[in-house]
Image (tube, rainbow, N blue to C red; front, top):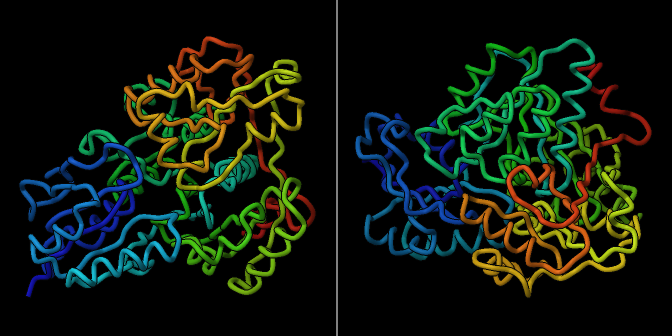
Length: 435
């Protein structure tokens, strides 16, 4: 009998699992999808153009809060959990909810979800979000290009708009960011590569994306999102661990899976972490991935104008996902404020408007840091208004991009940059030379 399936997701892994396993599989009927984590991504359809011939009307996407009712209403046989960066306990709470409603609960692994490339693939992933994948990806790209290799980066999906239009996206310059109406989160991931002249692909259909990227690449770089496992089978799998959050490599899904598969484990930010934190993550690497090569690194911060930080009352804007579901209580902007002598980090909460105010209510650990939320034009404007209403001397931009490209910031702003630097031996250059 055909099994009725519901896919739980957050506009990324869910679509990929559907495309590579369920779309043309006559053993299953995908009745619905649910969405969470990202604002305003439910209430859409997975469009017919992507859903395939079996689904001429597309597939409805509901809020995850409707999960139990959907299982009952549609007599769902199997629920497939397909999003990332959540505690193991959270996953089993969802499994319990699904089982109590009568359905099976499923997690999909590499054998059924990874596509193979005809070109070498290096994947850069992590055990949590906000550890430093982006600067590691940039470092790997720089090293490969120094050796004369043409690299193309394929980024983990962030399709929060018109899914049919986002099937296969190519980013080569800033005009492409505007053409595809990119959110702040997307710009944070794409702009640093574009600044280096590196082509970036992303979208929804990662088989189609791979075939396009292979046409212009010697090496494919998988730039992972959250702590998800790669969509492509890697020839070299690099995984970052965070000594600022020691133990998280054992407690979050699917980050632990990533570490267990690692060829290279990178312990980042050792300069700003405690020795105890560094030792704990090294112990857990030895426990979970004893054959992995360990690289230690730092990600020092470089402000564009130190004088605008010293003795100033500053508003710190940090990378959104790192603070929200990444659960960090500081980022690059905070480290810069502390290191370069800010007088005070101003609390933006009294000045927050609209969905930014709601973000503070949802993520109570944020304190006096402002996450760079910008999922759509309306939220970008609310972020801009919150920044400009906050009474401060300087705005510190700790995000990977210059927010002034998408927001009119009325006060002096300092951009913080950060790059990966390896400490000791082996280095990433040593590893890539062997590769």
